[in-house]
Image: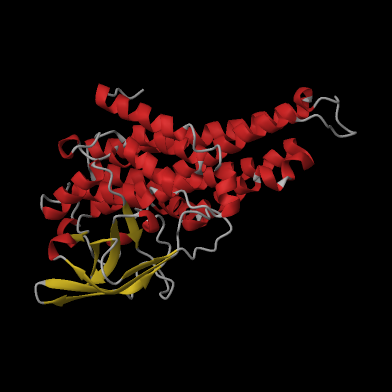
Length: 403
Protein backbone atom coordinates (compact mmCIF):
# COMPACT_ATOMS: atom_id res chain seq x y z
CA UNK A 1 0.00 0.00 0.00
CA UNK A 2 1.38 3.39 -1.07
CA UNK A 3 0.82 6.24 1.38
CA UNK A 4 -0.79 9.34 -0.17
CA UNK A 5 -1.22 12.83 1.22
CA UNK A 6 -4.51 14.73 1.47
CA UNK A 7 -4.06 16.64 -1.80
CA UNK A 8 -3.38 13.46 -3.77
CA UNK A 9 -6.26 11.68 -2.03
CA UNK A 10 -8.61 14.46 -3.11
CA UNK A 11 -7.37 14.27 -6.68
CA UNK A 12 -7.75 10.48 -6.73
CA UNK A 13 -11.33 10.82 -5.51
CA UNK A 14 -12.06 13.32 -8.28
CA UNK A 15 -10.57 11.00 -10.89
CA UNK A 16 -12.50 8.04 -9.49
CA UNK A 17 -15.74 9.99 -9.83
CA UNK A 18 -15.06 10.50 -13.54
CA UNK A 19 -13.86 6.92 -14.05
CA UNK A 20 -17.07 5.53 -12.53
CA UNK A 21 -19.02 6.81 -15.51
CA UNK A 22 -16.64 5.88 -18.32
CA UNK A 23 -18.03 2.42 -19.00
CA UNK A 24 -21.71 3.38 -19.28
CA UNK A 25 -21.55 4.32 -22.97
CA UNK A 26 -18.16 2.91 -23.96
CA UNK A 27 -19.62 0.25 -26.26
CA UNK A 28 -21.94 2.79 -27.90
CA UNK A 29 -19.10 5.28 -28.41
CA UNK A 30 -17.06 2.67 -30.17
CA UNK A 31 -19.95 1.40 -32.29
CA UNK A 32 -20.83 4.93 -33.40
CA UNK A 33 -17.21 6.19 -33.61
CA UNK A 34 -18.02 8.97 -31.18
CA UNK A 35 -14.71 10.41 -30.04
CA UNK A 36 -14.33 10.58 -26.22
CA UNK A 37 -13.33 14.24 -26.29
CA UNK A 38 -15.60 15.06 -23.35
CA UNK A 39 -14.23 12.16 -21.29
CA UNK A 40 -10.63 13.23 -21.96
CA UNK A 41 -11.48 16.74 -20.79
CA UNK A 42 -13.17 15.41 -17.65
CA UNK A 43 -10.17 13.29 -16.74
CA UNK A 44 -7.82 16.22 -17.28
CA UNK A 45 -10.01 18.51 -15.19
CA UNK A 46 -9.97 15.92 -12.40
CA UNK A 47 -6.16 15.83 -12.48
CA UNK A 48 -5.39 12.56 -14.27
CA UNK A 49 -2.81 14.27 -16.47
CA UNK A 50 -1.09 15.87 -13.47
CA UNK A 51 -0.57 12.76 -11.36
CA UNK A 52 3.13 12.44 -12.18
CA UNK A 53 3.80 16.18 -12.47
CA UNK A 54 6.08 17.13 -9.54
CA UNK A 55 4.44 19.00 -6.68
CA UNK A 56 6.66 22.06 -7.19
CA UNK A 57 5.06 22.54 -10.62
CA UNK A 58 1.52 22.18 -9.32
CA UNK A 59 1.06 18.46 -9.83
CA UNK A 60 0.52 15.52 -7.49
CA UNK A 61 3.98 13.93 -7.69
CA UNK A 62 2.31 10.53 -7.37
CA UNK A 63 4.40 7.32 -7.48
CA UNK A 64 4.16 5.13 -10.57
CA UNK A 65 2.35 2.58 -8.39
CA UNK A 66 -0.54 5.04 -7.89
CA UNK A 67 -0.59 5.84 -11.60
CA UNK A 68 -0.83 2.10 -12.32
CA UNK A 69 -3.99 1.76 -10.26
CA UNK A 70 -5.56 4.77 -11.97
CA UNK A 71 -4.65 3.58 -15.47
CA UNK A 72 -6.13 0.14 -14.87
CA UNK A 73 -9.33 1.77 -13.59
CA UNK A 74 -9.53 4.05 -16.64
CA UNK A 75 -8.89 1.15 -19.03
CA UNK A 76 -11.55 -0.94 -17.34
CA UNK A 77 -14.02 1.85 -18.10
CA UNK A 78 -12.82 2.57 -21.64
CA UNK A 79 -9.48 1.24 -22.83
CA UNK A 80 -9.31 3.87 -25.57
CA UNK A 81 -8.85 6.52 -22.88
CA UNK A 82 -5.97 4.75 -21.13
CA UNK A 83 -4.11 4.47 -24.42
CA UNK A 84 -4.94 8.06 -25.38
CA UNK A 85 -3.09 9.19 -22.23
CA UNK A 86 0.07 7.18 -23.04
CA UNK A 87 1.82 9.93 -25.01
CA UNK A 88 0.92 12.56 -22.44
CA UNK A 89 2.25 10.46 -19.59
CA UNK A 90 5.40 9.68 -21.55
CA UNK A 91 6.29 13.32 -22.22
CA UNK A 92 5.48 14.23 -18.62
CA UNK A 93 7.93 11.56 -17.52
CA UNK A 94 10.61 12.80 -19.94
CA UNK A 95 10.19 16.35 -18.62
CA UNK A 96 10.81 15.11 -15.07
CA UNK A 97 14.34 14.20 -16.21
CA UNK A 98 14.90 17.34 -18.30
CA UNK A 99 17.27 20.06 -17.15
CA UNK A 100 15.64 23.30 -15.90
CA UNK A 101 14.64 25.58 -18.72
CA UNK A 102 11.70 27.19 -20.54
CA UNK A 103 10.38 23.94 -22.02
CA UNK A 104 10.47 21.89 -18.85
CA UNK A 105 9.02 24.58 -16.61
CA UNK A 106 6.31 25.77 -19.01
CA UNK A 107 5.16 22.33 -20.06
CA UNK A 108 5.05 20.82 -16.58
CA UNK A 109 3.08 23.77 -15.25
CA UNK A 110 0.76 23.51 -18.26
CA UNK A 111 0.20 19.81 -17.55
CA UNK A 112 -0.62 20.66 -13.93
CA UNK A 113 -3.22 23.13 -15.25
CA UNK A 114 -4.81 20.52 -17.51
CA UNK A 115 -2.89 20.80 -20.78
CA UNK A 116 -2.57 17.60 -22.78
CA UNK A 117 0.43 16.22 -24.70
CA UNK A 118 0.28 14.00 -27.77
CA UNK A 119 2.99 11.92 -29.49
CA UNK A 120 4.23 11.89 -33.08
CA UNK A 121 7.04 9.36 -33.34
CA UNK A 122 6.60 6.53 -35.83
CA UNK A 123 6.42 6.81 -39.61
CA UNK A 124 4.88 4.44 -42.16
CA UNK A 125 7.33 5.46 -44.90
CA UNK A 126 10.40 4.15 -43.05
CA UNK A 127 11.45 0.54 -42.28
CA UNK A 128 11.46 0.98 -38.50
CA UNK A 129 11.27 3.54 -35.71
CA UNK A 130 15.02 4.18 -35.73
CA UNK A 131 14.93 5.37 -39.36
CA UNK A 132 13.02 8.66 -39.48
CA UNK A 133 12.35 10.77 -42.57
CA UNK A 134 10.95 13.77 -40.70
CA UNK A 135 13.38 16.67 -40.93
CA UNK A 136 14.42 19.47 -38.60
CA UNK A 137 16.51 22.26 -40.10
CA UNK A 138 17.86 25.49 -38.69
CA UNK A 139 16.41 28.71 -40.10
CA UNK A 140 17.87 31.76 -38.39
CA UNK A 141 16.75 31.96 -34.77
CA UNK A 142 14.46 28.94 -34.99
CA UNK A 143 14.06 25.48 -36.52
CA UNK A 144 11.66 24.25 -39.19
CA UNK A 145 9.95 20.86 -38.87
CA UNK A 146 8.62 18.91 -41.87
CA UNK A 147 7.37 15.37 -42.17
CA UNK A 148 4.55 12.90 -41.80
CA UNK A 149 3.90 10.70 -38.76
CA UNK A 150 1.57 7.82 -37.94
CA UNK A 151 0.43 6.02 -34.74
CA UNK A 152 0.00 9.49 -33.23
CA UNK A 153 -2.21 8.15 -30.43
CA UNK A 154 -4.10 10.90 -28.64
CA UNK A 155 -2.63 13.79 -30.64
CA UNK A 156 -6.05 14.77 -31.94
CA UNK A 157 -6.94 15.73 -28.36
CA UNK A 158 -3.64 17.45 -27.55
CA UNK A 159 -2.46 20.99 -26.80
CA UNK A 160 1.23 20.15 -27.43
CA UNK A 161 2.87 17.56 -29.69
CA UNK A 162 6.05 15.61 -28.99
CA UNK A 163 7.60 15.04 -32.43
CA UNK A 164 10.52 12.62 -32.66
CA UNK A 165 13.22 13.47 -35.20
CA UNK A 166 16.78 12.40 -35.90
CA UNK A 167 19.35 15.18 -36.02
CA UNK A 168 23.10 14.75 -36.40
CA UNK A 169 22.93 11.09 -35.44
CA UNK A 170 20.76 11.41 -32.35
CA UNK A 171 17.09 11.42 -31.46
CA UNK A 172 15.54 14.76 -30.54
CA UNK A 173 12.00 15.63 -29.45
CA UNK A 174 10.63 18.80 -31.00
CA UNK A 175 7.77 20.08 -28.85
CA UNK A 176 5.30 22.20 -30.82
CA UNK A 177 1.85 23.62 -30.05
CA UNK A 178 -0.90 21.47 -31.54
CA UNK A 179 -2.46 24.54 -33.17
CA UNK A 180 0.76 25.70 -34.86
CA UNK A 181 0.53 26.79 -38.47
CA UNK A 182 1.39 23.83 -40.69
CA UNK A 183 0.16 21.10 -38.28
CA UNK A 184 -2.62 18.78 -39.45
CA UNK A 185 -3.98 15.84 -37.44
CA UNK A 186 -6.10 13.27 -39.32
CA UNK A 187 -8.27 10.69 -37.58
CA UNK A 188 -7.54 7.94 -40.13
CA UNK A 189 -6.62 5.07 -37.79
CA UNK A 190 -8.28 2.02 -39.38
CA UNK A 191 -7.32 -0.73 -36.93
CA UNK A 192 -10.04 -3.12 -35.79
CA UNK A 193 -9.45 -2.20 -32.15
CA UNK A 194 -8.81 0.91 -30.04
CA UNK A 195 -10.82 2.74 -32.66
CA UNK A 196 -11.19 6.01 -30.77
CA UNK A 197 -7.54 6.63 -29.92
CA UNK A 198 -6.95 8.79 -33.02
CA UNK A 199 -3.81 6.76 -33.70
CA UNK A 200 -3.59 8.08 -37.23
CA UNK A 201 -1.64 10.62 -39.25
CA UNK A 202 0.02 13.88 -38.24
CA UNK A 203 1.42 16.14 -40.96
CA UNK A 204 4.01 18.85 -40.33
CA UNK A 205 4.53 21.36 -43.12
CA UNK A 206 7.33 23.82 -42.33
CA UNK A 207 6.30 24.14 -38.69
CA UNK A 208 8.28 26.67 -36.65
CA UNK A 209 10.08 25.18 -33.63
CA UNK A 210 11.49 27.21 -30.74
CA UNK A 211 15.09 26.05 -30.03
CA UNK A 212 14.27 26.04 -26.31
CA UNK A 213 11.68 23.34 -27.04
CA UNK A 214 14.10 20.75 -28.40
CA UNK A 215 14.64 17.91 -25.93
CA UNK A 216 17.67 15.66 -26.30
CA UNK A 217 17.75 12.01 -25.21
CA UNK A 218 21.39 11.60 -24.23
CA UNK A 219 21.11 9.72 -20.97
CA UNK A 220 21.08 5.98 -21.56
CA UNK A 221 19.56 5.20 -18.16
CA UNK A 222 16.68 7.59 -18.76
CA UNK A 223 16.12 6.07 -22.20
CA UNK A 224 15.95 2.57 -20.74
CA UNK A 225 13.51 3.72 -18.08
CA UNK A 226 11.33 5.51 -20.62
CA UNK A 227 11.07 2.45 -22.86
CA UNK A 228 9.97 0.40 -19.85
CA UNK A 229 7.54 3.16 -18.82
CA UNK A 230 5.87 3.35 -22.23
CA UNK A 231 5.41 -0.43 -22.18
CA UNK A 232 4.04 -0.18 -18.65
CA UNK A 233 1.16 1.98 -19.92
CA UNK A 234 0.27 -0.63 -22.57
CA UNK A 235 0.36 -3.39 -19.95
CA UNK A 236 -1.88 -1.40 -17.60
CA UNK A 237 -4.33 -0.95 -20.48
CA UNK A 238 -4.30 -4.71 -21.05
CA UNK A 239 -5.05 -5.31 -17.37
CA UNK A 240 -7.97 -2.89 -17.47
CA UNK A 241 -9.42 -4.62 -20.53
CA UNK A 242 -9.25 -7.97 -18.71
CA UNK A 243 -11.10 -6.53 -15.72
CA UNK A 244 -13.79 -5.05 -17.95
CA UNK A 245 -14.21 -8.41 -19.67
CA UNK A 246 -14.50 -10.18 -16.31
CA UNK A 247 -17.07 -7.68 -15.02
CA UNK A 248 -19.13 -7.78 -18.22
CA UNK A 249 -19.08 -11.57 -18.22
CA UNK A 250 -20.31 -11.79 -14.64
CA UNK A 251 -23.16 -9.40 -15.45
CA UNK A 252 -24.06 -11.37 -18.58
CA UNK A 253 -24.18 -14.73 -16.79
CA UNK A 254 -26.15 -13.19 -13.93
CA UNK A 255 -28.87 -12.23 -16.37
CA UNK A 256 -28.92 -15.35 -18.55
CA UNK A 257 -32.14 -17.38 -18.56
CA UNK A 258 -31.41 -19.87 -21.34
CA UNK A 259 -29.01 -22.77 -21.02
CA UNK A 260 -27.68 -25.57 -23.26
CA UNK A 261 -29.03 -29.14 -23.46
CA UNK A 262 -25.72 -30.61 -22.25
CA UNK A 263 -25.52 -28.32 -19.22
CA UNK A 264 -25.76 -29.90 -15.77
CA UNK A 265 -28.37 -27.37 -14.64
CA UNK A 266 -30.97 -25.24 -16.45
CA UNK A 267 -29.86 -22.10 -14.61
CA UNK A 268 -26.63 -20.68 -16.14
CA UNK A 269 -25.88 -18.75 -12.94
CA UNK A 270 -25.74 -22.07 -11.07
CA UNK A 271 -23.93 -24.08 -13.76
CA UNK A 272 -20.56 -25.15 -12.29
CA UNK A 273 -18.85 -25.14 -15.71
CA UNK A 274 -20.09 -21.65 -16.51
CA UNK A 275 -19.04 -20.44 -13.06
CA UNK A 276 -15.63 -22.06 -13.53
CA UNK A 277 -15.13 -20.12 -16.75
CA UNK A 278 -16.20 -16.88 -15.09
CA UNK A 279 -13.69 -17.58 -12.32
CA UNK A 280 -10.91 -18.34 -14.79
CA UNK A 281 -11.48 -15.07 -16.64
CA UNK A 282 -11.53 -13.19 -13.35
CA UNK A 283 -8.31 -14.90 -12.25
CA UNK A 284 -6.56 -13.86 -15.44
CA UNK A 285 -7.66 -10.27 -14.82
CA UNK A 286 -6.30 -10.48 -11.27
CA UNK A 287 -2.95 -11.80 -12.50
CA UNK A 288 -2.65 -9.15 -15.22
CA UNK A 289 -3.24 -6.42 -12.66
CA UNK A 290 -0.72 -7.94 -10.23
CA UNK A 291 1.90 -8.02 -13.00
CA UNK A 292 1.40 -4.32 -13.71
CA UNK A 293 1.65 -3.35 -10.04
CA UNK A 294 4.87 -5.34 -9.71
CA UNK A 295 6.27 -3.55 -12.74
CA UNK A 296 5.23 -0.21 -11.26
CA UNK A 297 7.22 -1.04 -8.13
CA UNK A 298 10.24 -1.80 -10.32
CA UNK A 299 9.91 1.60 -12.02
CA UNK A 300 9.56 3.37 -8.69
CA UNK A 301 12.64 1.48 -7.52
CA UNK A 302 14.65 2.84 -10.43
CA UNK A 303 13.49 6.37 -9.72
CA UNK A 304 14.63 6.09 -6.11
CA UNK A 305 18.03 4.65 -7.12
CA UNK A 306 18.74 5.19 -10.86
CA UNK A 307 21.52 2.68 -11.48
CA UNK A 308 22.40 0.66 -14.58
CA UNK A 309 21.29 -2.54 -12.87
CA UNK A 310 17.88 -1.09 -12.01
CA UNK A 311 17.45 0.32 -15.53
CA UNK A 312 18.09 -3.11 -17.02
CA UNK A 313 15.71 -4.67 -14.50
CA UNK A 314 13.01 -2.19 -15.59
CA UNK A 315 13.44 -3.22 -19.23
CA UNK A 316 13.36 -6.92 -18.37
CA UNK A 317 10.35 -6.64 -16.08
CA UNK A 318 8.43 -4.55 -18.61
CA UNK A 319 9.16 -7.14 -21.30
CA UNK A 320 8.04 -10.01 -19.07
CA UNK A 321 4.84 -8.17 -18.18
CA UNK A 322 4.12 -7.57 -21.87
CA UNK A 323 4.65 -11.24 -22.73
CA UNK A 324 2.55 -12.64 -19.90
CA UNK A 325 -0.26 -10.06 -20.05
CA UNK A 326 -0.59 -10.54 -23.79
CA UNK A 327 -1.29 -14.24 -23.19
CA UNK A 328 -3.48 -13.70 -20.13
CA UNK A 329 -5.65 -10.96 -21.53
CA UNK A 330 -5.94 -12.49 -24.97
CA UNK A 331 -7.12 -15.75 -23.42
CA UNK A 332 -9.51 -14.03 -21.01
CA UNK A 333 -11.22 -11.93 -23.68
CA UNK A 334 -11.61 -15.01 -25.89
CA UNK A 335 -12.66 -17.37 -23.11
CA UNK A 336 -15.50 -15.18 -21.89
CA UNK A 337 -17.59 -16.41 -24.83
CA UNK A 338 -17.40 -19.96 -23.45
CA UNK A 339 -19.48 -18.81 -20.50
CA UNK A 340 -21.59 -16.28 -22.37
CA UNK A 341 -22.53 -18.65 -25.19
CA UNK A 342 -24.61 -17.22 -28.06
CA UNK A 343 -26.04 -14.64 -25.67
CA UNK A 344 -22.65 -12.92 -25.67
CA UNK A 345 -22.64 -12.39 -29.44
CA UNK A 346 -25.23 -9.64 -29.61
CA UNK A 347 -23.80 -6.58 -31.29
CA UNK A 348 -25.43 -4.20 -28.81
CA UNK A 349 -23.30 -5.72 -26.01
CA UNK A 350 -20.06 -4.98 -27.84
CA UNK A 351 -18.22 -7.75 -25.98
CA UNK A 352 -16.09 -8.43 -29.03
CA UNK A 353 -14.41 -5.07 -28.44
CA UNK A 354 -12.57 -6.49 -25.43
CA UNK A 355 -10.72 -9.05 -27.55
CA UNK A 356 -10.20 -6.61 -30.44
CA UNK A 357 -8.87 -3.91 -28.14
CA UNK A 358 -6.60 -6.31 -26.24
CA UNK A 359 -5.22 -7.71 -29.49
CA UNK A 360 -4.60 -4.20 -30.83
CA UNK A 361 -2.76 -2.99 -27.73
CA UNK A 362 -0.70 -6.18 -27.70
CA UNK A 363 0.31 -5.72 -31.34
CA UNK A 364 1.96 -2.32 -30.91
CA UNK A 365 5.05 -3.87 -29.29
CA UNK A 366 4.90 -7.52 -30.40
CA UNK A 367 5.45 -9.87 -27.49
CA UNK A 368 7.60 -12.23 -29.57
CA UNK A 369 10.42 -9.67 -29.60
CA UNK A 370 10.10 -9.08 -25.87
CA UNK A 371 10.22 -12.84 -25.23
CA UNK A 372 13.33 -13.10 -27.40
CA UNK A 373 14.96 -10.27 -25.43
CA UNK A 374 14.25 -12.11 -22.19
CA UNK A 375 15.58 -15.38 -23.57
CA UNK A 376 18.75 -13.76 -24.87
CA UNK A 377 19.37 -12.24 -21.46
CA UNK A 378 18.72 -15.52 -19.65
CA UNK A 379 20.87 -17.68 -21.93
CA UNK A 380 23.61 -15.32 -23.09
CA UNK A 381 23.58 -12.57 -20.49
CA UNK A 382 22.83 -9.97 -23.17
CA UNK A 383 21.81 -6.68 -21.59
CA UNK A 384 18.52 -5.20 -22.82
CA UNK A 385 18.78 -1.86 -24.58
CA UNK A 386 16.26 0.88 -25.34
CA UNK A 387 15.81 1.84 -28.98
CA UNK A 388 16.57 5.50 -28.19
CA UNK A 389 20.13 4.39 -27.46
CA UNK A 390 20.52 2.73 -30.86
CA UNK A 391 21.74 5.87 -32.65
CA UNK A 392 24.40 6.57 -30.06
CA UNK A 393 22.09 9.06 -28.44
CA UNK A 394 23.49 8.40 -24.99
CA UNK A 395 27.19 9.09 -25.61
CA UNK A 396 27.32 11.48 -22.70
CA UNK A 397 26.32 8.80 -20.23
CA UNK A 398 27.24 5.52 -21.93
CA UNK A 399 29.66 4.65 -19.16
CA UNK A 400 26.76 4.09 -16.82
CA UNK A 401 26.65 7.57 -15.32
CA UNK A 402 23.54 7.94 -13.17
CA UNK A 403 20.92 10.64 -13.66
